[in-house]
Length: 169
Image 1 (cartoon, rainbow, N blue to C red):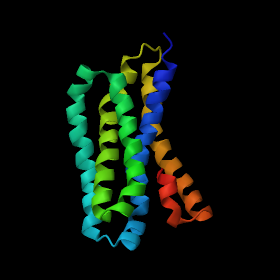
Image 2 (image 1 turned 120 degrees about the vertical axis):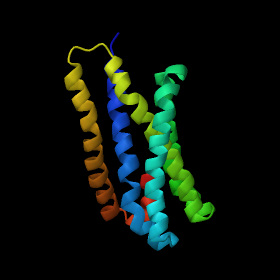
Image 3 (image 1 turned 180 degrees about the vertical axis):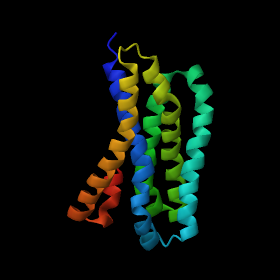
């Protein structure tokens, strides 16, 4: 009967979505220098992230009703987490671009599911100030971008950019 945990989880899911779109882009110069990726390969990673998010968003707009919103949200978080761990590990154990492609698809799919189910889930919660809660929900994406920029910059300055896989994990 108390939906605060559900709403808080949805807030954090939008912060994760911000991590998906912001953190990898902070590493493109590192990917270029460490893995020898070309600008077209980096551009493809950007496009793949967008296309994967949109495609999964379209699929889960209908699928979430069938499998459930809770399962969808848990699955989205799991995909994002596995994607970031994969980003840290796969380029080191297989061809780097292929590893980054796999990781990108995983965390982007998680973000796409979040996009499809997050707002409808909060909208369905019986709260008194729905408009205000929806505004706060969508502001969490912005706060997530700011947090990623600040925390990753602090990490890179103190620990070193070469330790980015630790931060990804």
